[in-house]
Image (cartoon, rainbow, N blue to C red; front, side):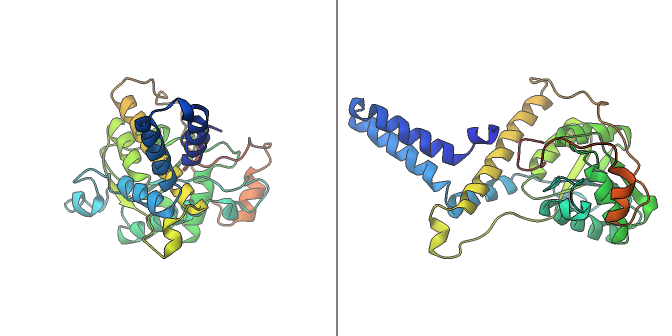
Length: 293
């Protein structure tokens, strides 16, 4: 329910209700300001407004920290770190591969392509999640199906957020890392990896930005609201992570997240038979952009 706090739709409704309650007591300037703020919130319900926020966040990777430029002189043995993106459904009640979120598939594809171009670089998959079957286990099995050598695969399954993942990986690797995630998620990820002591560069797997496409692009609709919520969530996450990095907000202690070596399984039915008999997991949870991580 916390998403209601950063949803532009909530702002539109609250501002409209507030204006109706105090309209007769507002002066001309107060009414103009109120209507202006309401219109601004309405803009965030459109694909135009939502994609403007998406582009702003995705362009937030600090200069020199994108792998295309920062990693020019890096060795091809520098570890690749894939940030998982959760499940769409409970993997215990569905084919685990089908249960993966679309974002998880996209990120894994980018990481596998990068791994193929750098076969000597180990590939670390980070992310546990709230379910009995862990995100990193399913993604590791899928990576093997796509041809990644098992000897180069490593996984961490104790973390539930991006921040926890970065600190949990300190017990497995150090120094330079190539972080693979969506362009929207990378700025927040890099803050976490810097705070954990890594020298990291970001490798975007995909972009959530969509350019103009007709009149509907400028009218309120669900896709615009969704993109605004995704971008605002990441912006708030960056603020929180910067406070954590400065020691102003207590962070999850490193060491609470565990390390997991994925089983040598290559198919979803095998995953189900081997892991999913330990009980039912908690409710549905996605890493991004919902409040799970």
